Image 1: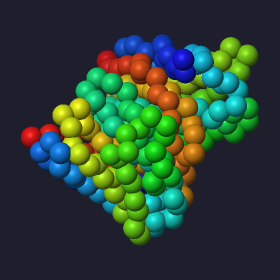
Image 2: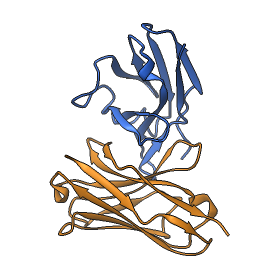
Image 3: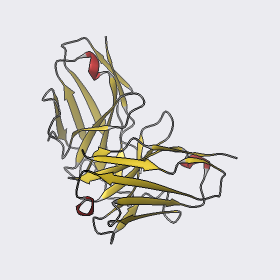
Image 4: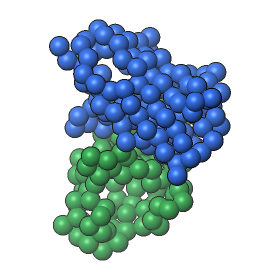
Length: 117
Length: 111
């Protein structure tokens, strides 16, 4: 069964850091690009970042560039998102999603990040 | 990069057909055939319905279809059913540094 499971969310103060994880199972993780997509409460999804299948290429949304870093460990079938200098506007449910044909084919259940003082 | 523009709500009776529009620009929808559509029920993750403008992933009902004309994409849903009541989002690849842009979302109500 193809599955993505996010973890690591929580409540954090502005300016602090948090690292999210996304554990993959049921497919050849090392052959797919993987994305992070977030969704603020009551809002539509917002693309955050993508990493190539081999981890050599990353792209970021302007809103997180320089603050967030996407990485992966193919030996552990795990994706990461290191989030630094967090802002209140980063509050959202964060999803990892398997990339396919320039779309987001399989989504995890999401992990909530709340940035608040 | 501004969000793609969708109608806030669309409604229809069971069995009817509806269409959701998604307006973009020449930097996104008008420049790429990489439009995708997602269905999201409350409290759940989005689900891919359409990719590359008009193709359905395996397992997605044939009642869903996609198209594009110029800078606007559309999702059509035929034979409306109660289970189709959800939020729908379009998404496109863009030529800007933020590589993907989503739509504002459309709430579909089955009357």
